[in-house]
Length: 326
Ligand code: ISE
Image 1 (cartoon, rainbow, N blue to C red):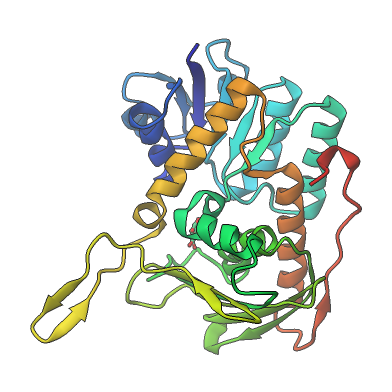
Image 2: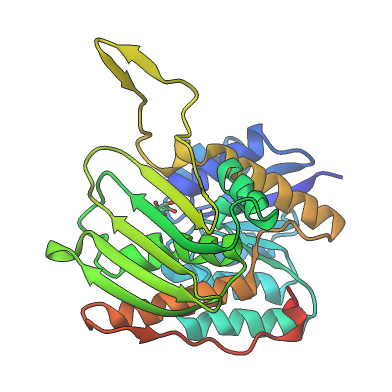
């Protein structure tokens, strides 16, 4: 039976999720969309039922499972509503804006006794990151010592405030680094560039690895995400994710995507298909769960507090409930 999915929020990501559900997902269909802007919802819904109230979509009989792509501040409470009615939910990152709210989600899921929450940390489904993790686990480069990350956006709008570089962008590196290394982050230090952009964030893990990340939200030239894992015997890094490179007019070149949608299109599609499969079978999709969402939000909150502190912050998290055994 095809899973009926409702998408809340039809901005850049929500309309892409709706498109993926219409065109590239097996065993699921787009049943409903919701946005405060009804016209925008209608355009993304392409004939599916339109809501302007997210709770009405979550409670609708014709919706089996929910994708949340509403503004970040609404994520936590909408996920809690999905858990309350027992509907599986794929929530865009971050899971919540505060560690307290993210922990409420964890507690609600544990109380429900069923894994209902997946968080949209899509790099876990990106071919280059999946390959790096496989090679790391196979011991290809020996014991990891450093992970260098670069995360650049060409430009962000004025409302994208300083802390959002951490809570909305750097959260990807927090999640990906924990997942890739199989380690927990224990300390962090933030160096701010002129005007707070770029940031350079270094973290140390419980296995003494160093994770360095440049977060540059207005780099000017294109969308550029890159990681290099340094091991005792060698390195593995993501290659440029372009289908072609050019030799032209004395130059060798490739083109950067405009933003994360084309860069991670395949990852978003694999993520959706894996999530739908997990909804249908009850088996893990290997995506980020509520616990991962809580840890990432909590570390991001502590790193925001360390912005401008010019000191190393010790990072702490709650004890992981047995329900989320690795
Ligand atoms: C956006 O929401 C994403 O998820 C992108 O991957 C990230 O690069 C961008 O900075 C975020 O705003």
